[in-house]
Length: 584
Image (cartoon, rainbow, N blue to C red):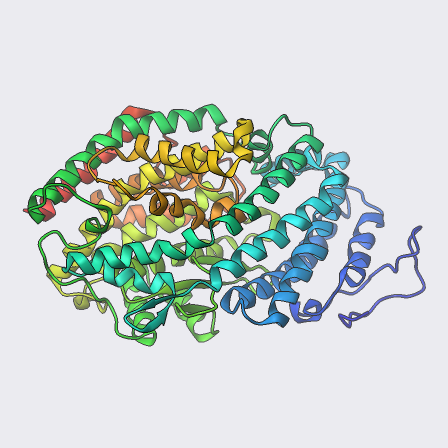
């Protein structure tokens, strides 16, 4: 076997596959593995005699094996997104994404069925078993090659994006590297940067739309194979959304219109008056309204990394230790560069129980919030890693995003240099105000992204590229209001959805951000009353991993699920009041 594991060759399964008795000692054993190297481990777990006496050892062995394999796949993906121009890294990522991961999913469903059929249960496994049963019901063998094709298309999208560059004043830059120029006081410079950032997406629109067309067809086929009328309904179930429905998502969209859009109009009107403009244009929404220079939190990546540690230490000393362990282990890749995939993420290495963070920092205030956000995910991973089984640790994206978004708010008071962070006292207030405004402004984007996907997969016109672009424009007008003038910028506005990784790589993973942001605002509200209790509840909720249903996880963190207008309006009002205080 290529991965070098020791096997007991005297035992063969009924299919002639070697039965594995000893697992490798590290994920590196699977670094160059192909499917034929992986299958024997699943086969042994699938054929081992199983009863209530040995089921706990069986679960532990399965958890250890999947942790090794998952970590190897995660490291391959991390390496590729850090450098999409390397053909060897691309080949490794594709090997896992198209050959191993889809087939591993099939084998995991097979193992899930063994546990469900055994009828074994104990405290702490209830949510796990419910998910196993759900995934069994969704599985269809015909979808295995379709998921492989989808993974390959996601790699193509990453490659197209990673290769995008523009020429700015004679220098080649990535679109992300133009973000600082959207914060300069020269309005003409901002407009040029805004238009140039969108240009590669406008030029590559047909290529990106073609990738999405193929994804659309595959996803609708996946849904029909699994017995669903459309991919929206399949995705909702596939994400184990047991505690809210697609109709709740629609309620969320309406609540954003009713509770958030008026606040957006007030914020933008205040900005327009401060800037002395007749009308705001899109390139006027990121610059400081008072004409102050843009916040510059760091000069180089080393400084960026170092100054975050004391910030986390002020929230909780353990968080500082978790963060420094990532730095020491070289699990932070934070700077933007040509060839690097767009976006940011935190990934967990389940065998090492070590998180890593990927992002594209360019020296703007938003980079600080992104690092705080992804570090919240990382701390969640560490807290939940104490649970014995891999399947108990990840609670779903809703609670995972509470972890990250709460960290942005909990750490915000400590980002000043008096706490070892980045800013003067005045700039700390500016950054905090920008964070709060950004939270309010995020909800319309979240609603438009989610509503867009509902429409795409429920309406036959979702297969038409031009119809998709028109629908995106309609939704942006619905959720963003009229306080920003987009006249003559339809192409630039359409380009925004082609930049959104979730449409391509993680469909329907977005409403979670909105649900979680409302949870995080409740955690922040608690911290304003008693920081120690709020952080204790936050950590207790993270440590529960996936061992409780979503409403109970929110409750442990001192929050509740909110989809209604009144609940949303209460939190938006709290944020506006804080903004008024910062202005004063």
